[in-house]
Length: 209
Image (cartoon, rainbow, N blue to C red; front, side):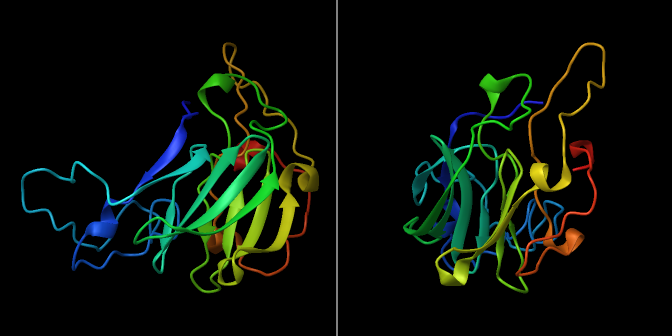
C-alpha cells in the first residue's frame, strides 16, 4: 500500500474550461461515489490539458483528494504538527479561509513504510443537504466544519479514543502494517450529517473502516 508523502499541488485546469459548467465533486470519487460525472470534457482532439494550469496551490502533505462544491475547492493537508483544512476559490485558487488543528504526521499506532506517507489520507466529505464539511485525520480526528461560516468548527471526536481502537493485528507472517485512518467518511452511509458529534457505542477495529 503506497501513500505519497509529497506536498500536494492542486492543478485546477477545470477553472479554465470556458463555457463548460463544472459539475460538483463533493465526495470521494465524485457526485455518485463511483468515479463518474455527467460533465462533458470538452475534448476535441489534440492535447488533453494545457501545458499551464489555470492555477496551482501548495496545500500541505497527504494523500487525500480535493472536493469541489458550488465554486469552491476544499482540501485537507498536513503542515508541521498540524492538519489544515482550506477553502479555495475554484476560479483562481484564492484562499477564502483555513482552519488549523494540532495533529501528528502519522497515527499513534503507525507501523511500516512511514517514509512513504504522512498527513491526512482520507478524502473529506461534503454533505450536499446541510452544506457541512467533514474531515478525518490520520490519527482518527473526525471533525465537522461549517463552510458557510468560514469553516467554523461544529464538533470533533477522536475515533481511537471514543471507540477504544487498538493497533491493527498482524494478518500475514511477513507484513505488519498500520497506516492509520485512510478511508473517507460518508455522511450518507453513516448518517453523520448532524450538527452534534456521533456517540461512541462499542470498541471496534480499524480493519472495518
